[in-house]
Amino acid sequence: MDAPAAVADAAVVIFARLPIPGQAKTRLGAGVGAAPAAAFYRAMVGRCRFTLDIWDSTARRTGGVEGAAHVRAVGGEVAG
Image (cartoon, rainbow, N blue to C red; front, side):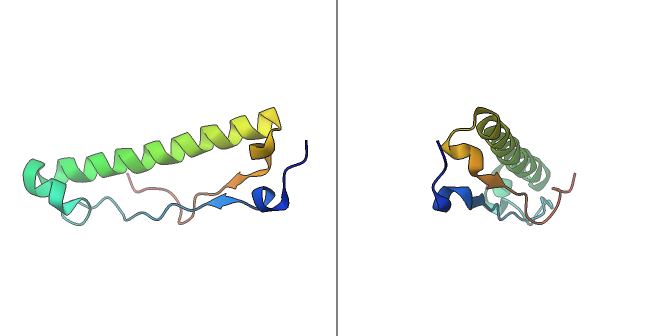
């Protein structure tokens, strides 16, 4: 089955800040500390990218409607 044009041109964009202590997850950092909050944020952004990579590779392999979707990490690697 061919994917509809709207799905074939689909993209997921992740807007994320650098996980700098004191600048990311500041409200969480007030309770647990800036460094643990930044580490949590780094892990969650990484998990989101990992999940999207798995979804994309699975969709491409199965050739389903989702197989035409392209997931691109915009903005480079998460600092770590």
